[in-house]
Amino acid sequence: MSKFFKKSSKTLGLPPGSIIHVGEKKIEKTEIKIIDYNKEKFKELTCKRIEECYPFDNKSTVTWINVDGIYETEVIEKIGKNFNIHPLVLEDIVNTSQRPKIEDYNDYIYIVLKMLHQVEDEIFSEQVSFILSNNFVISFQESKGDVFNHVRKRISNNKGNIRKNGTDYLTYALIDAIVDHYFIILEKIGEKIEQIEEEVIDDPTPKIMQKIYSLKRDIIYLRRSVWPLREVISGMQREKSRLIKTSTNVFLRDLYDHTIQVMDTIETYRDMVSGMLDIYMSSVSNKMNEVMKVLTIFAAIFIPLTFIVGIYGMNFHHMPELEWSLGYPLILLAMLTIGIVMLLFFKRKKWL
Image (tube, rainbow, N blue to C red; front, side, top):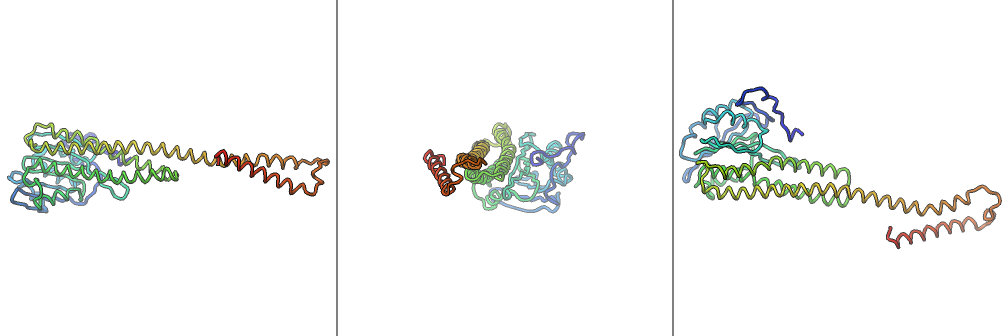
């Protein structure tokens, strides 16, 4: 259950705004990468020192500062001081148990989301925080590796409208990349559901039951990570902030539709998995009924045969068939005939 609930006991009793990392240490050293661009210019660099990103807070270009690793709280604190980020926001950034949300601080908007990865059959969640300001966007990730490569390529190749728009459009593009990746994970889950459905119908085994419960946990985990996203996108649309232009609202509406589609798919999969549990129980019950029917048929066939054997197994001296030379083979023939007749009768009744 550590996947669902992360310990936050380290922050108990501390004053608000205490920057204490809560979560797993996923990277050894914080890395900061910067992409700075406008219609004509593009620049990408990796900062070796924190101070290298400071000059980008008041330039006329759009700057995306990506911070990989939030374990080093002193680095986060320095960034917060330079860009005037509220201590409560910094506290939320390093606390990886945050629920997806959006908060407006006038000079910037704070957004926190869950970015999902799937390794083999395991789904992992990573908290991603965005600081949307007038001329820069800061993204904070728990580890290296993300789903933003297509956004980076669009910026570097100057494709689409991303170089023509501001930080609000860049933030939309990053969130849209996260939501699009949800569809990839849902597609894999859908294929897994179809496979398990066939196995449940063909051969329900305890191992299949374990797969169903594992799948159910993944869907609950996915739902918990995605469900609040609707409020975040809706909040971006409703915000009367100068940081989000009217032209971007069109794209946010489309992003909201994608979010609703993701949630509908998750709910559908959850119902399907619950239905698979019922199918499993019905299949096991039907399989048991088939076994019991076969055993009952064998028992029914042997009842008259046992009756005959029981009669001739009595130790009475005056039994006429005991002295009969053909008695033994005739009794065996009679027992065989009775068995065949009963089998034909059961087959005619379609009990076999």
